[in-house]
Length: 96
Image: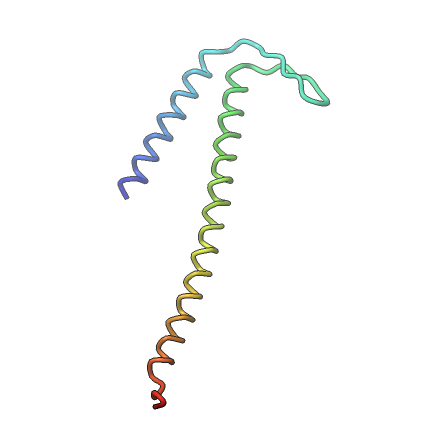
């Protein structure tokens, strides 16, 4: 539980720093896209890039988490099958 609270505090601190830095920068930045061009305030650009990085990080983390969960379930099934096989083999009468 402590690590979740610590992660939340760190996330809020980063968000606060991002908002503070972004709020003090109100100059216009010209952004050239592949097919377009626009002018946005630096604070808006910082907020958009911060949010996009946060979402991308969560998606990548979720991908690896789900991948590990699937691997864990497969190993659990294999362990259950092997345990059942060992128990069956141990219960069979030995032929002399």
